[in-house]
Length: 637
Image (cartoon, rainbow, N blue to C red; front, side, top):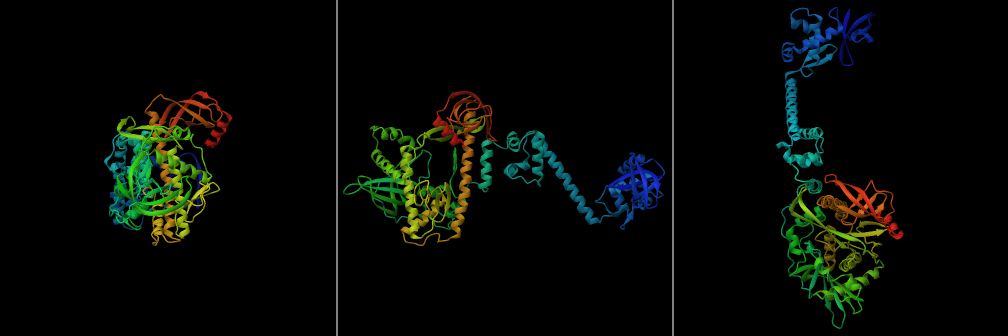
């Protein structure tokens, strides 16, 4: 005697070895012996053999029409063997009964299980909903397969064209488009951005990095919403000065300018003039909302995203040939450069020149100043020399003189009209030694303005946003505190209001003190603290993005010169800092060398999507002296 039973959700057949009424000893068709409870038995039969029964029943079940079975069965609960008798019109044999059982069991949306071997037909409305769901899944599966095939072949499905950022940076794995895209990546053996590059949906590796930043911080794009034009404070008094700015060639948001005016009886009146967009719109305005959301201008090689719209920048940037609204700090100096008085004013300042580094530095540099060389004469030589002398006095007064003349800044220029094999953009990287006379001049006067106005706010009991350093850690706070690194009692960023929201906030507060008006932010303002927190997080993210893009363009620079050998200095272990560009590279093949050793490397390959580079050690150029080795080790730590 044979039997059919259910175990662990599967149907099995076997031979009865012993029948003890409540339990049985059974040998399955695979030769395994099991103990089985009697109520687990679905059917007993004498023929065919257990293995043949299951084989023939599975074939018979495939021939049965599930929809027809649902139509002909009653609405009440039923046993499979009873239904088999009704369906066949005679007492069914073992194969016929088992075929009915297997078909009923395999169609759960048509027949709901009510126990071992017992079923009930699904209500019509539930069945229709289930069938609609199955059809939807079938269509989705077809769509997934079609999109996957197109992607693998290098074609971009139309359904995916409008959702590239989501696919790349925040995939929703419940969507069929994402399922198709990820399946295509697996089949093609490519990462998401590489597959999109292959399909032509991603124009270049630059777009991948830039668009990821926009997706995270400018999800609505970089276009500005509508806003009212900034107010023109035409009633300001006109300063009797001739001011000039000092910036690099690409600067359009000119925040600061200087003036040098002889005083009656001798000495000088030095003016530090800061652009005053805070006069053009108030807190709570549409322009404020724009600046509050962006918090800072975003800088990167070849591009920038300004904090303020062009109309606002153009209205307040300190452009030559205009009388510009400004907050000015004046210092009255003796002929010996002793400060005998100071004054802050809100006014219009005539800007007569916008000096650029590349024009002035060949004429005004360390050689001219330190080696007592007369050098070539030029229009602003006397004013710049006086300001540099003042900067030297101010630096010494802070007790924080720094010798950073050996450090180098790198300037990136991207020609977007030139195309390379890596996409639009040909990059040029130039070097500029840090700590030049122009650098010191601007830095010291900005430190003076920021510390002076920070103290102005503190003395007036008006909150501001300060940068405080103690124990080597820099943090921002709404209360004045010393900045140990700069050697000043307090330091409030106020000199870049066109580019940083913190400076804009402080400028509102400074103007309120100078005009004896209620401040934009009252003491203990929750909005002021929120602006501080948001600015710190966002400013750090922007700076990190700038560093990433500088590294990216360094790789582009190397790829523009295939086969180039580059020189660098070992910082520590296998980390080398290149000379010609601001890039540090790990070199696995580097032998054990002292920090500061100069080496030559060859570039084997680079990856613009991962922003990674593989370099190989070529030769040692020079051993370091002990002092240089110590400095390099410290720099690389």
